Amino acid sequence: LRPNVNRAILRWGLSDNVFVEVRLRLNSLANNPARQLVRTTEPIDGMSYTFGLIDPQNRLCEHFFRFHVLYGQDEETIYVVGATHFRQIG
Amino acid sequence: MATSTLTLEIERAEAGSQAVRAWVPLTDFAARARLLETHIQEALGAPARIKALVRDVIAAEPKDGTIFVYLNQQRKALIECFRFTLDDLQTTRDLAWQSERLGYSVPSLPLLEKTFAEVKLLEEYTLRDWAEFDPNAKADPEGAIPLDEAFREREAKLSPELRRELQSRLEAQRQSGDPEVGAVG
Image (cartoon, rainbow over all chains, first blue to last red; front, side, top):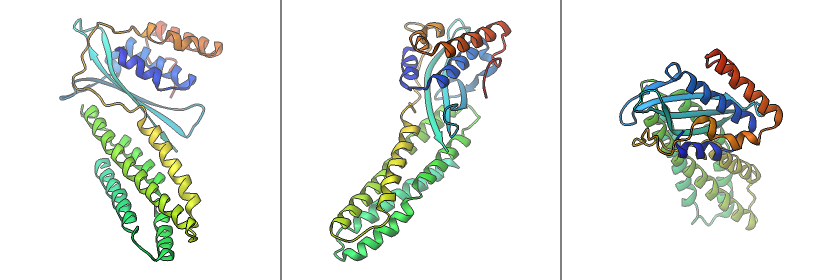
């Protein structure tokens, strides 16, 4: 993770349950990136990793996560360089 | 499309705000209280309209590789939409309180207060963590934090039960090599 992404995720103030799901999703991305990434095009080139989940403590709240991912020069390491989170209620 | 709906919502809020401001010189306070009441009735629908907009924005996410550009554009449009909507609600609220102080009741004022608070909360839920994507982001290894290290402190704060659950599901992912194992929803 780029430090800005790490800081952002920690700043989101996710509940423990939602944080655990995000942690697991990022781990699954690391395990098998090719299966889950979607290519993006100019002007924001790279790959996107997106998912949503329902807040287990508030079923009316849905969280959406969008990550900007780039492959390193070794073409194996992936870097999460951007991240955003928004919520929808009701 | 979400963008055109957003534009309409911004225009609606902007027009509402300007219309309310234009009432200020009105000297017939009873008429103004009635106008405010009518305007409030429409303003009470703002949270539902904004929720529908956010739903539309998510539903219309493109699958052609332009998602980050789209999200950056929608973020800007939603910021404007919230700004105009809150401005409209606040102006109406201020005038309604003024009217009350002058002895001309605006019966829906308490509902307007509730609506204002609801839209503020929606704004926070929608935009607080919605960062702009950077077209110049680089895959720079310097300073990058491996995933296993990135959340150590955060994971240490989890309850023992949740920490165990996380570890066991991470282990299941490792063993199966299947990213879906242990994933929810």
